[in-house]
Length: 343
Image (cartoon, rainbow, N blue to C red; front, side, top):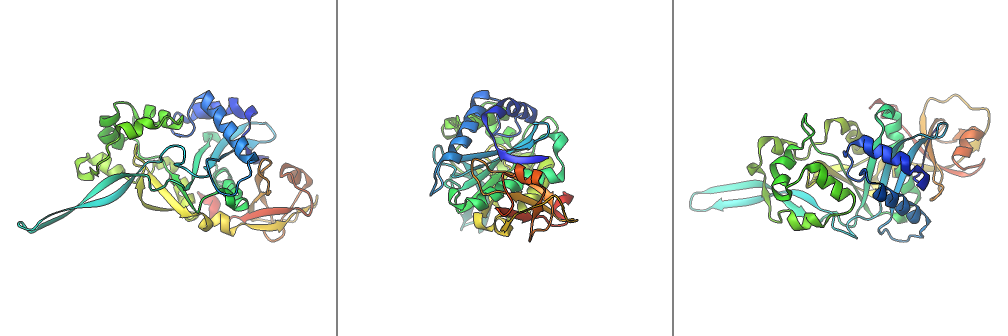
């Protein structure tokens, strides 16, 4: 049975394996044992902390096969970004150039370095092992953390963002980075991502251009990459857009991947999920609808996917035990639509 639960220290070896397997594609999952240990420690500390307003807390959850003990994936939420170090983005805007004498009026698309998302919550570190990347697992790993937000709204900001990895070519290089970032940083994108991932971000403020970057001065491949996700994560972007996330012209400063945003209360899985009373019985009714169920705990948070009736969820004693719940306990229920598992 596949279970979502908070990451814990015994998971470190398998977490390292996932980081190596991701090959640096996830900035917040670097192959660095010390950093990954800190990530686990921050999650455990955040779960034990009493929170009335979001701060520097971070919550990471793993997708575990409870029968084998194998960890198949990880996903996370940062409660409020930009508090300890600035969170940089490029805002796509226009610079107007006009000549009254020549009657010429030009609007030039440009990239403006900004910190507009400081103070927002952020979904991050979503990685699923390739051999486990089914539609059901993608939904469970991505949406279970939304149920954690729904159950603990005071822990998160009014707005939530998520960054998607940008375009790379057949050699794994980012056309945007090669056209812009390399000239200022003098390093490969993978190294810049790694330094950012382990929270060594001062080099960004020191080296990044602070004046607007005129988009027409970039080469064609770089221009075409702006705001475009990596093709293999388009299903994840579709899922996020279905959750209510929208692109408003902000991109990553390294690879120009799109940043999506939404009011936290407007996240579909947050407002659609409902508290119900759990029934526990060996006799299970026939049901075709897939549900994601979660308890209301913090440190003992659990979520899983089952078939059932969203209005009166009923599970077997084994499933209830995995959820850390008993008959008659409250349970949060998210019903998945018929099209949800088609990605």
